[in-house]
Image 1 (cartoon, helix red, strand yellow):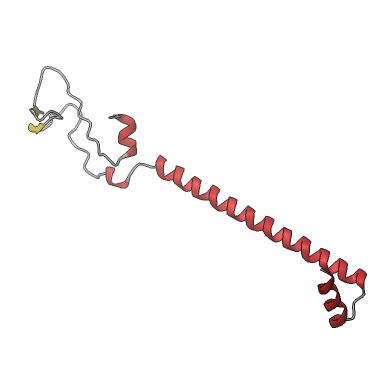
Image 2: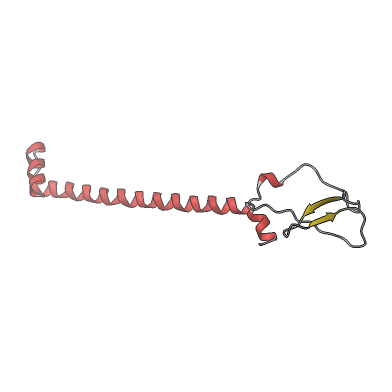
Length: 117
């Protein structure tokens, strides 16, 4: 520390009191720079977290479609598909009771909330 003081004194013609004050200002500015940098890092982490939360809350764009499907009260078309156990299930057409079909995707978080596995 004394070496820096001597260099400042010789180069700029400053006395010891002025060089101590200048060294103190450098130290304060250095600490302030680190504090500002830390606050910026924390701000970036907070923003990244908010972007992640927003991404989880918005439904996927692929789930939105322009096809409204059958009208209320209209019979759905008849089709057959395998269930989870591999049995063929026929769905659609006029029936004595109503049937609710829920189509889910493995990568859809909104679908997972509706029908957890």
